[in-house]
Every structure is written in structure tokens, then in C-alpha cells.
Image (cartoon, rainbow, N blue to C red; front, top):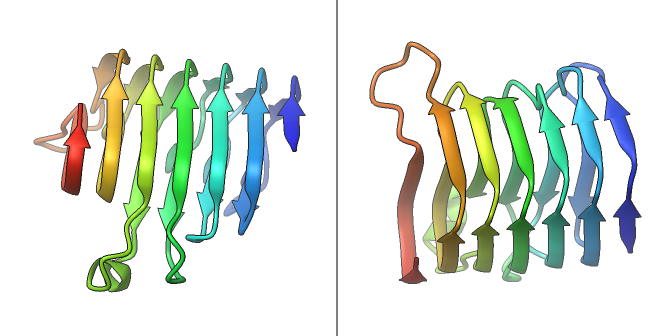
Length: 168
């Protein structure tokens, strides 16, 4: 499935513009998200999502939470092969957030083979890239500026928690 060239402007509170659940082989490319996305512009959720590509998109005023959120919240099926590449994110809570529910950490089920590369992320109130639990992450070639603009102390541009194996 390919979502290509769509433009999204605004949305209702507590909503996600593109919400992907239990899906495989999806590409979101050349889309434009603007005018204060309510929660997340794109959310990939549930551990049964595999082979997802989010590339060449632009996010302006991309949400008070995360422009792109990838979260495994249930299931014993491993989420893997997710690529976030060559996107522009300007104004968001977190630019890109990869999250694993605490209950799954105990099982050893982690998102695997996550690539976050060549993105330009600016003007986030929190982290540009926040990854919490996973295996085989590659984070490379990203350009980050004006990160942590909220007055909260100790905001990190990139924050990594509980990651395993190769991280670059």
C-alpha cells in the first residue's frame, strides 16, 4: 500500500491523521502535514506492523505530541523493518518517538531494525528523536536544530533508552 502526495491540514483534538495498526508493506511518501496536527501526524502502532516506510514527507506544526510515533503496546509479535527517511519536521513535541510499552520490555519483545536517517528536525519542544527500547537501530545523517524549545530543563536532542545490539 502506498500513500503518496496527499496534503493534510489540521484535525480534531485527540486524533491521528494516519494511524497504522497490524499492517505490512506500507509506504507513506511525498505527503504534507500542516496546521497543528492534534496528536500525531503518523502513528504506527501495535507490534504486528512490519515493513513500513515513512519517507520524503514534510511536517509543519506537526503536533503537540509527536510528528511520527512508532509504538508497540501489545502482542508478542515483533514489530520490525521500519524506516523513517528524508523527512522535514518543523514544530512538534517530539520529532520522532519510538516507544515500547513497559509490559513488553519484560518479555524481551522489542521493535527491531528501525532506521531513522537523513531527516531534518527543528523547533521541537522536547527531543528530536526519542527511542525507548529496541534492537538493531540505525540513526544516521539527521540534521537537528532548535531542539527542546520548551523551558523544561535537560531536554536531549536525541534520547536513547534500553536499546540493544547495533546502534549508530
